[in-house]
View 1 (tube, helix red, strand yellow):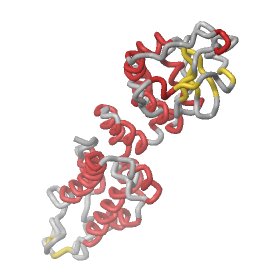
View 2: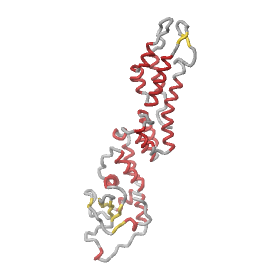
View 3: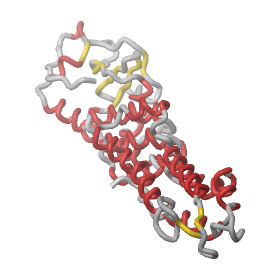
View 4: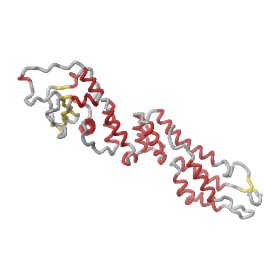
Length: 300
């Protein structure tokens, strides 16, 4: 529903559809009509105390009811305020503000229209209920969409939680393009920065001790002969590419360093002069895991 200047522009003289079974009490003194033709009869007091928008609407001068009996509806049904929301969205919103059991809020297709309506009508109650449910498994299963919702409404703690959950995703994949387009520039840049920072920080760390810096000539610690550390260089490349696709790094530590062909080649590499293994597999894997655990996990 778009905000109107007067209540007269929102109403018609009589309802045209059937009442929703939960909102049909004759005690209600206002009727809301959804865009798909379902009517909801509620108390104006409820709307005025839970919605800043309706409170403002009722503060405007109201139309004087016509006192001519022949023009009154037979069942004394009040005029209908037609709104832009469909019946599912309106039902969910009114259930929350009227103290009824809330619907299953287990998908973004359900909660996003309700949040939009709650914001539009200045209803903090429904927004706080949905905010409390954001950490439940059905909504956490789509962390990028969760991030978009939390950034949209300025919920910083939840946005940080969602940004951490996106580390399992390759946000550059085409399948995420539509969701990313919903983000504001600040939220989008913050997310890109988090993912890139993890990759680049690990890339730099893998050149520092105790790791081998393969940028120049190095020698075997046992016999002193020159050693080509190409297997470590190739493994680092695979690690960084994996961090680009899944910045969380769990696949690097849990399976990659054990199963990748580049990893096996690295652990098997030996000095051609003294036949000593070049890399301590256990130590290297432990330090890589520690490096990943020290990387930033949320947006700032």
